[in-house]
Length: 232
Image (cartoon, rainbow, N blue to C red; front, side, top):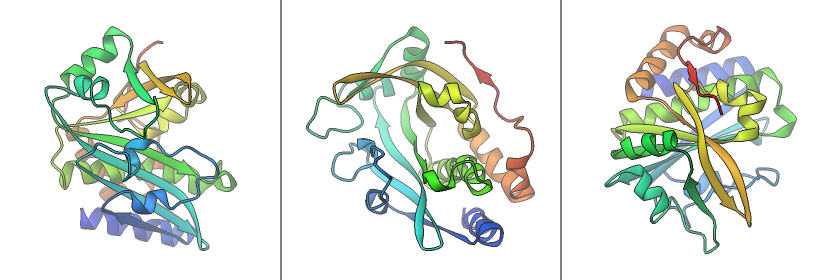
């Protein structure tokens, strides 16, 4: 893990003059001005029901321009009961997640034990569409998922993306093995359709080793490590 992070830091510094810092909770994540973007409660120290968390913050020319976060949940009896029971967070509002659709429910029911929730990916508007942004979108979750597997020993790792992100094709750049619709996020009085993504620990280790072997070239080549996207 140290070698992986060292190589990532050296790569973004050499190519873009950017710095990458890793933190043991969500405090640093919450201190980033995400240009009006909502900070999901599962990645907020005040509201999360996660047993622990980590975040990554990227700086360029003194500005915080990118984030990532991952939260660890104890999924007993399964992740579906956690999501629809106590929930991933509670901020005093009626915000909640609902599983809608039999395939999504089967996946979350199958997630048991230690589960990492990978997300919080954000890049400043001024950097979107740039080579640095195209690197950060796949690299940050690769690093965060590796932390969850190597440091936390998780049994499963999943992510969630708004449906519009999937329609734009951005979700494919997260390099997930499986993506499915079937989640609804009730936020600020409205229902927001979401997709979830899944990446097994073995693939996460494989991705990390591939990055150690190939460096940034891993993200420039066609993605052959992720595959199945379900029809909506």
